[in-house]
Length: 278
Image (tube, rainbow, N blue to C red):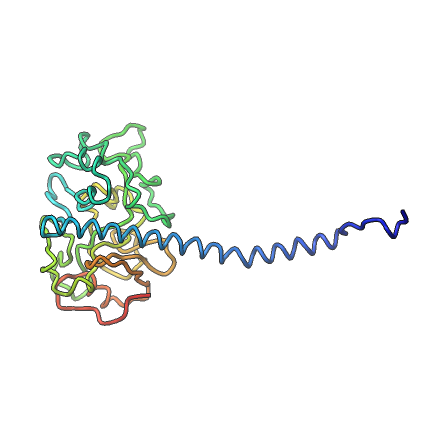
């Protein structure tokens, strides 16, 4: 066979050109892939809030009220997120929790350590120092499960109301301390009032345990500004929120404080008029 008829391979220059082209294509596609993955995670978070909404409405159908946000604050701290567990197919966890004792009591350790997947947003990556994955950390680092250590967390908090400038009435939301609110009490409208919202990445110091009844908060400022009992998430541009009518919507960071405040209160006659849907 003559030299001219022999198969010819890539030269080094041609190989480098191909590698460069592939690198450019990967660079162009990677953001799109990441955006698609985040869209999927955001949709999963949205669906989880819808499940929580179904559970809260099932509770209301049975009891005539939504669950108390935090019952027996000074002693047990019974959480709204505990009371709806049977409606989230978590009856064994609910049955093993003794409501005569605090969420931190050793009697309730097995239940409180149980991770509830519905309570965890798949986009959460920014964790506080006292949170390890889906649990709170070892408080004093002794490697022993002392009261309150290693309890499972939630990325969703109950809305106790608005604490923004100009609002004087405290606990003006739906999931509040030591009082159960009925749908008839939400005079601003079920579709105009937020029931639960994302508050992700919290540990024990910010009451991030799902079994802790203090997993409720008054919104006091804009979205995604403070990771401390405020609406916060790792979704770019905003947070998911559950409304009292059972619908879930994405709230953008650019929402005005007046609209956000109106959405967090149940009966201050401050119905939001701006569009809040994406």
